[in-house]
Structure formats: C-alpha cells, structure tokens
Length: 193
Image (tube, rainbow, N blue to C red; front, side, top):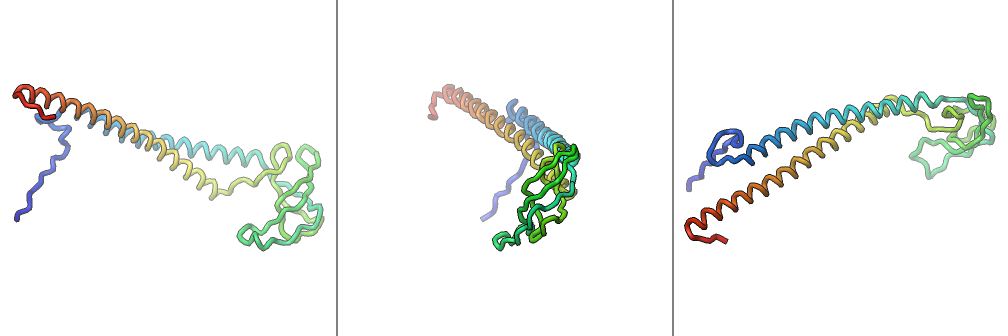
C-alpha cells in the first residue's frame, strides 16, 4: 500500500487564494501582533520589575546600618532541633541608637556567648532592630527572578488575550461557514441538519 503524500502549505493566510477569508487575514495579524506585544511587553515589564527590586534593595541598604550591641545575659547553647539553621540563638542585647537613645531587645546572637560580649546588629533610622540587608548575590537573584516572573506574566497575559481573540475569530469563521452551507443547501433544496 502506498503512503499518501501530504503537502503543507505554509503562510496560507498571507497568500492570495480562493479559500482565504478576511477573518483569516485578521487572525494572522492578531497572532503576529500578539507575539510582538508579548515579547516587547514581557521585556519591558521584566526590566521595570528588575529595576524596582534594585531600588528596593538600595533603599533597604540606605535605611539600615550595623551597630555594636552588648549581650545583657549569657546566651543559651544551640538547640539540637535547629541543626539546619545558622546556629544562632535568641539573646537580649542593649545598644545605643544614632540619636543617643538606649534600646534593649531580643536579637539573634552566637550560641554560648557570655554577658557583656559585643555582637553586631542591624538597626533602621529610628534605632529599631531590623534584618540585615540582602547580599549582592541575593540582590541579583531577587532582581533576576522578579524580572523573569514579571516578564512571563506580562507575556502570558498578552498571549492569553490573543488566544481568546482567536476563539472569537474561530466562532465567527464557523458562523460564516454555517451561513454559506445554509445558502448552498437551500439553493439545491437540501437540508444537511
């Protein structure tokens, strides 16, 4: 038995042929415009998100600084349940804020540190404890992931809209085919459905 040959006609929506309809050309332009907008929109959204993350990291670095604090009581030993952590424990520390006010609060300190030991803590502009700013590698990762996710979401939104537009155009195409079949059937006196 011979295998049938199948000819693929590429770019058929762009070529002039008797089977092409206006809705086919509109669909082709919608797809091209959708891909271009998805790529450009995703790129712009990704760059804007990456820039926003970079600015947030720089603001965090500008608003916090490291100060020396003194441990008030001896720190406890490390807990066996926290083997995967950074091995730091909670201890009460005292420090002087940039405005001269004295503060005392719980902070993460090295285990078994003695009372009076100096430890480094991060404080904000008001002198309250804050988390240390992210490192350069963490900042790069946050920026890259924020940009990639924002770009993917923006591009996906555009491509989803294109998909919905194609569904509407397919419905219109089917309605046109139905109307043409109806005209052919009534001309010959037949009824197909």
